[in-house]
Length: 79
Length: 359
Image 1 (spheres, each protein chain N blue to C red):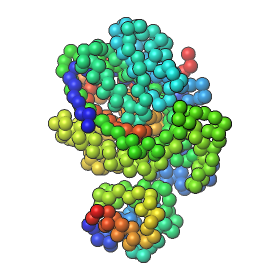
Image 2 (image 1 turned 90 degrees about the vertical axis):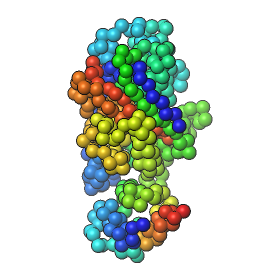
Image 3 (image 1 turned 90 degrees about the horizontal axis):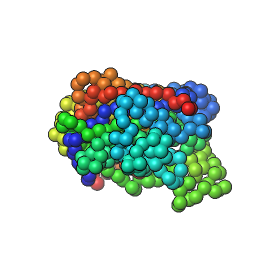
Image 4 (image 1 turned 60 degrees about the vertical axis):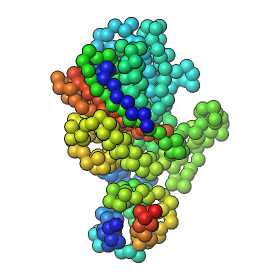
């Protein structure tokens, strides 16, 4: 699986109005100004395409930080 | 998994009818709470723009009727030689009888003509073709008229951002005939009934008949309004479904046909929206110049009419040309249901979009 650092870059690239390098493992992504239903689609797309994991709405609800979202993907990949 | 191949039937003519009234997302700023930036993002990311919608007096049956009349006039075929008419729709005129029976009468087709409806939406056009191919292959029909159309704009609540800007209306007529030369057609179909709640009009059938209660619109947690008589869609779930199921179905169809993706001339997907189409294309690693995508931005998501609409609106010249094209069709949506077909198609006598006019 791609490392956490790469995941954060992937996440940044999927979001509108987020500069590269602006986010960290501790970023609470649902607090981002551009986090909305469209962002859920674009992030879901990136994660499915790059990691082969399909995130559901509950997965976004259950994760607070980017690191938590990353570990959830990791767990799903291992499952 | 119903995979099947045929060699006796060929599509010879397609007409699509769209209503003249155009709506634009730019004119609906209040639906998005005055948020112009959000509209720009939706236009850029999802690719929503314009859509064609019917008035309250016009139904999918009317659009299909005009498409059929145009097709019959342009091809000049003898009406008595049509052995079957099948209508693909989720928005019929009545709970009963079916649209196909009404149209058999209105079009003046022979009393020896079989007529029935197929209750499917965005996947329905491929199912209609599949049935038509089987009916011709079995020897029971020489000519089958497939009429696919929907008016989903009449089912959406105008204050539901998740669906109101997406859906347009359309009706289509496709003539399938017994071919003198061998023409290949390969089909792959599937269903996931666990996805029923993701795309549904809850009321109006026997399970939840229309009442004063079903007509009451409520606001959901996202600030959208709808009643039980309106179309509900969980966009995220339908997106997830589309990017998983469609590439797999397309790959299975091509593998079954023994055709490499490079050998396909065009991929005509159900015109859901540009975002879904480009994501499917990305997963299949196909050249987007082979993927018609303008139809949805011009007319909206036309449900069962969207595939013929894309063929008439974007591939008219090639499909009417001398060369036979390998065209992959794939429909997906309400059910959840999907179907893909690889067809050898060309030399169409008519392939065009017309505007609806009341007779």
